[in-house]
Image (cartoon, rainbow, N blue to C red; front, top):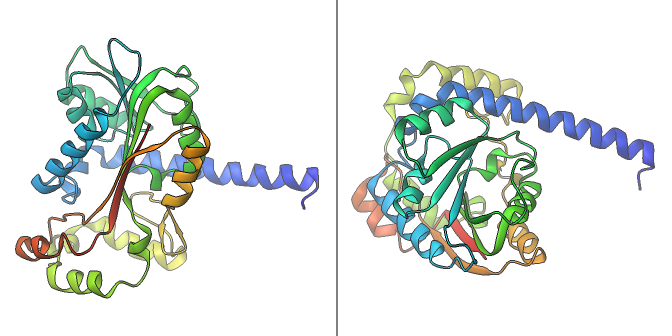
Length: 279
């Protein structure tokens, strides 16, 4: 029930806040680009990479566009985790990110005629034409975006009819609720990461969280019990835009600090992460 002036004022404050969040995210990821893979053992391990490739391949097979040559967008490509898998599927790949340092790293790692890069502005995809992409992948990205539903609307715009949007590596709703079995797994499986004690930025982060409880070293935004990615909102938004669900799966993310035997015992019993693909 805001009047027009109040509404404009509110939207202006919101926009400035989101712009600041985006700037902070770019700053953090430019700084950590070269060390990203070594710092993320929960992504760069054999179990997760095998799971990811199989899910990508299955979702890619659901693409049903009229394109002779398929083009994929790796949205928020980071150090090129999905870019590598997409190139192995023999498609033209656009690796896109807000971080120039990440894009430089991707170009160095994957010199290919089938690869191009795109710097994102953190707000929209104005540089991409409507209905121009066959396969869009978004892995561990949405929780970095202030208005992730608006980002999905843009991704839907550039996705061709029959194209697929693949979303992965975001926490399930169950992760944020009490789950005795999952808590039991964590207590048994998780080993102490002594290496964190040697990282100075972790101490800086602790101090900053005294003043801002929601500060994150990596600029994460939606990663708190009262503020996180909501899968039902994502599904509802994309269905309203004409998409259908072609794949949905919850899984237990494999972290490098887990005891392997305990992880294998619980991986079919509980889950904390979800992937979904929409056509």
